[in-house]
Length: 193
Image (cartoon, rainbow, N blue to C red; front, side, top):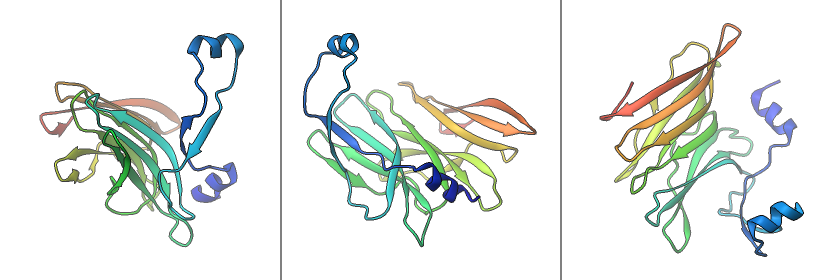
């Protein structure tokens, strides 16, 4: 079964941002085990495309970003990593993190206080090689993606952390020869190592 068919059979749904219509204190929710009732709204009209796997970050200075995996509808059936920016007043869709459509999975993002976001994801090539890529938001948009993982095995489930000194930590799982391992890379002085 192809990866896309497998995901469709799982019933992958679009990720939506929601805003609460009622306010409950955290303690009353925990004590009474009450579900939170939310009103949904969609950030974009993407037609039959689906947005999923959201990652939400803030620089704690008034800017927030939402990144998601946008699965393009048939006949394209590829993905992009979409980007939305909140400037304190409204959400606006920005150019995607990935300049080209491809086969992507599991975007994640981080942002240090006062900094710009960094995004990591998995790219699945036609030869079934799974690699972790990362891109950093710069003055004119996102940098060209950099492959951080090696070609051996299947890399998946990246997690990223940006800290105030400009260091970025990126961890991921890698499946190779029947064994899962955790890999860690550090970005410092404009280099991944």
